[in-house]
Length: 349
Image (cartoon, rainbow, N blue to C red; front, side):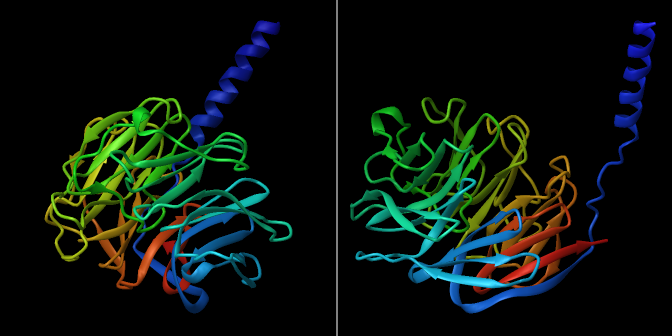
């Protein structure tokens, strides 16, 4: 009798799973709603339950209540220069902000009372950090341009209370003129079990770690490279295997050749898509949640671009060229930020 009930229960589970419909991400238009209008350049945003956090130039940051659209504005309080903030990350109780240039200070900010603390400081004329993310409540990482002969990588294992810079002896060497771009806080992607870093400039590659930065593999990409302002500007990974990179030539934003590529093997090999078609320079790309790595949205010099076939073809849904970064709240709603604004995007068929 017990075996019989187990059998029935198993059939029920299989039936329930098989009856689940694939989420439709076949969109044809997007509706825009401005949720912030201010004199600020924003390249760093993240969603946090009922809030959207943002950070920008001159030490300005804030949060938007996604239910009421109420905006609370803050500013970094520091005796030192606070450069433009392009890296943002979070744990449950704290927000972390990292300005791009010298001095590179990681600010730990309480979400409860907005108290601020510098938990890492790096003084170097070459320092320039591009992206930051937490894997969980304890482990976080940020990456930036080389100050020596490797990409700059700093790691925390105690929830952001302290950070250490990884020695170049433990990182892959970069080529001359290889660096990264702080376009949209998307040069560093942490999935369930992997870390991905992307570079650009004279060389444009993908650095992959399976053990949170202890060991690395480096893979070539077909993205345009060779000049200071060419290469990968943004990446996203749907899971450990499926990822997308975009960028191009920042100084020739309409050039849509060799600027979009996809991987299905964790970054080992990349296939150019929409080569000579679709959008040109891309500032940020993101997979649409629950789309099985099929649907993507990019923002940049050619407006809001959408693909529902793994990036093989693209459709412009809006011509706004002043958006730099985008993050999804769910499979139909996203927030995008850029020059003097943050907008809410609702995608529909």
